[in-house]
Amino acid sequence: MTLVRAAVLLLLAAPVPCLRLVGDAVALGRRGALTALGAAALGPAAAVAEARLEDTLQMRTSSSGLQWTDLKAGQGGEVQKGDRIWVEYMMTRRGGAKIYSTKQAQQPFSWVLGDGSVIDGLELMVSGSGDIPPLRPGGARRAIVPQVLGYGKEKGFFSSGAPTEIRNLQPVPPPYVWTDGNGDKVDAYLRFKNMYLNENRLDQPDLILDVILRAPPANAAELLESAPPPTVSTSPFGLVEP
Image 1 (cartoon, rainbow, N blue to C red):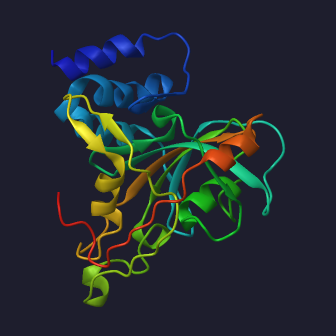
Image 2 (cartoon, rainbow, N blue to C red):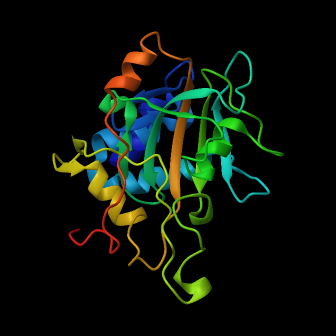
């Protein structure tokens, strides 16, 4: 029996499904055990674990092209345009490595819904649209965000014959350094920038976002005042170093 299979069987014995952000991963009870295990313990096998988890989730495809699924139902009223939104999110390259977790960095992300400052994929995840219901406070949702709903205006190099035009939208991870399962240091901003703010890439890989909608924290004003300015790309040529 492989390490992956043995560990998954052990975690599947958990009696109650649950959801929590745990450092390197979102643990999704029975279905999400593989994600938490992959990020926290397997190191190089994390991408394989994530791919298998993706296969187990029943993703829906909206008319916008966003693939999504609810991980936990929220409660309370629906958010409205003009509301200040607070979320925890984990950002992962589809079929690849984790990039950043606000929970791990202890830095929730906030914006005003509908102000045009974030990528369409995140806006749709929270506000909903047409065939996507709005996310309610406490709810958690996963989405696979294609390039056109993310940081690129076109579908990619092969659709137009030229590299995509980059949109400087949020969320962009700050220069936060974390340690992966192999003990290697990862700069979240540099990893993100190389994938999603680099005009020299032929195509941007799909982005996986796991989002939990939070109620406004009691110290919201303090957090906003102390938050660092949004990180944006300053180089028109993207990231040079790997």
